[in-house]
Length: 385
Image (tube, rainbow, N blue to C red; front, side, top):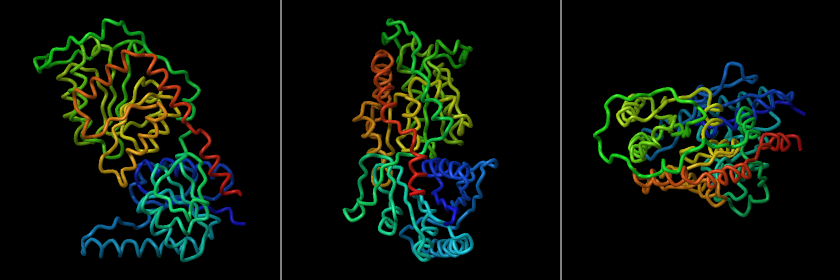
């Protein structure tokens, strides 16, 4: 029996991160792994990874004749390249993690009659996974309930959870704790307006005295976070602002302007478009504000962090809201829909949580209960059945 496994993934972090987790685990367990994705994967694949990765020509499909023509050419060459690799290496399984970049590899798998395992990260089966579900031997899901499934394929469903990076799993053993905040800090004595100092003190605080908030915009950077969050923190009392330590990931082109907003409002901020050591940032955070892509929220659950989630309103099949709703129902997150994500609304939610440590502690416990730390092992078991 072949010990070769092909893994195909879309190019966003939500697809690549769990796919890479499995690729690393398989490589460590005597499988020869070939990883296929589009060029966006270069942002996530590391030189030290013990598997080979290849760029596959692929494209989204849009309702435009010139675009469809070019997309068809790209997909055609992606299929040819995939067929070549399948013929040469004869994989035991082709495991696909969703996204349009998996389309050529999966077409080739069907043509050459290779076994397919699909993994769905979100609570709604993605478009490419829906297309190939009938050809799959097994469909692994991250959520206990996943929508978008036909009755004919439900017998193939196995809930494995979403693979999580080892450095995030390690955070699960840490206890959630909060800095001591005096009750009178929560009196709303903010100066409502923009008559604040133009220069920020940005003095170095004792880390244990800070309330750390991590703001993650996802692969797209969430422009709306840069627009709303600085002013939302300005709404809080001066006492609260003094103990806040904000870390925010945003779009590269918005880093400077977003930083200037926080500086204008005299709020301590660390901001960048990419943070290398996310495990450290997640570890020290007391509250996370984020979109609700599945890979991110399952990592936050593994680290036992309370969340405020703002689902991306234009996510395919509204899957981000479905993801977030699952966490809210299980008491791990507060969900604010994008149309309700206003300066006053988010600042009120932050203040309410900060002033109720028991609520934050309970949310942390609930997040930990949701976490599935053995997802990679469960996927590995599917391959060995």
